[in-house]
Length: 288
Ligand code: URA
Image (cartoon, rainbow, N blue to C red; front, side, top):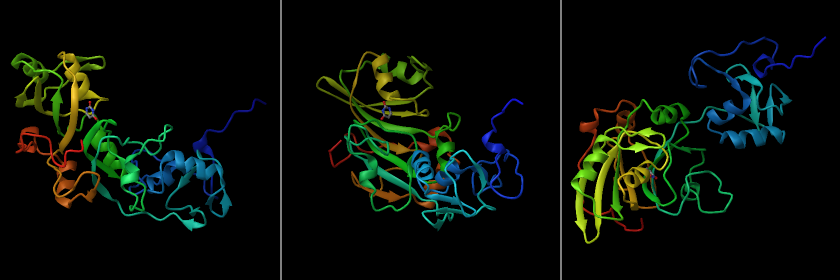
């Protein structure tokens, strides 16, 4: 007889045979069946890579048995999952707003050993992930959370939370160039959506702009500027939806206020969401 490998979701962890969970995608909702790796990361214990390494290292037990298969389907509600001998309890969702300085990367680990945003949030005892990314040389607002559903929703291309940037361009830009940016420019991964673009000032050889976009493509603002023959010399994200810095200083973080969170989940129309940035220069302190 031919050996047919079992699909991971066909493996059972308890006496009751389980079928795949359909639809809901969170341990908090009705879909409580997930792979072990996903259950661990969704419960806020760590990233999926970390979860895999704990499972492989034999640190995870399901119903009294050490399980070393990260792809095993388990049920968060019915199975007793222990990490290092402790129950995997549901953790409080936390949403933080970090004022990222330049020089920090937005990943958990850097093979080159550069500082990461996690160096700035050491006092947070839950594993939070960045919602989208900021480049190494971009500073400004970065939301981090352990609520994977919220993060997935915010980064979904159909969920158009406007993000506002202040940028210093390497050249003076004409009104035509600004209009091109507004209408949309052609990038290697397709045309950009219409953007709000405001000339903040021209100083010497440089134009300073404020730009609001509703997409989060890789290095999008930098590529948009290249598409109109300029370059970004300095980039700061100053606003996400209606969320601004508030009291947070560079390199520091604060929790999002409930109303800020609510506004991100159901954003108002783009134009209303966009508050005029009062300053005509980059935010202080100037380590950007
Ligand atoms: N656009 C970019 O080009 N870089 C960022 O970090 C954010 C938006």
